[in-house]
Image (cartoon, rainbow, N blue to C red; front, side, top):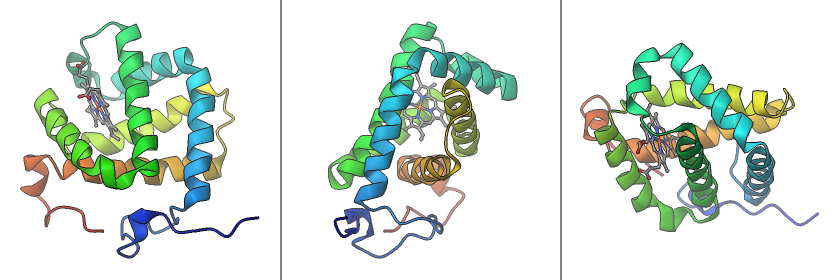
Length: 168
Ligand code: HEM
């Protein structure tokens, strides 16, 4: 097997919010493969995600005004954004800050991110018939949290409560 090379995200040293995993090329490949599998079950994912999200947080429903088909496209745009960020972190950072600032305008608050992440992981597992492997689920979780940190860097409400932008 080829030697594992560290992902450019780690060029400045490991990140404290990612205690459990190292983002290397193999992880990025696993996430890409997993994403393609998830995409092939896409119709199930969107239905499961929005059903679970609105059960958990009924007040969020008002934020999502588009028909399910359009929301499904946005959900996959979100996942694609995450995978592309892993594949090309340098070119995606400013995009994620802008995406985070737009989210603040949509009404997304910092505390919503963990709810969305947990709901998404449950919905992915459901859409795959309960076959999301725990190791891959954990990697998705860490990656979603990392992307959320970069998005929140663009959200002024977040900086009012914490010490500042994420450091790499
Ligand atoms: C990992 C975290 C997230 C990612 C990568 C993500 C990504 C995206 C993307 C790519 C879009 C398409 C529209 C655009 O580019 O502005 C979108 C739309 C949207 N997101 Fe997120 N999102 C995340 C978390 C959240 C959270 C925590 C909320 C709050 C509950 C949220 C609420 C929304 C809403 C309401 C829209 C659609 C607005 C509309 O209908 O036009 N997102 N998201």
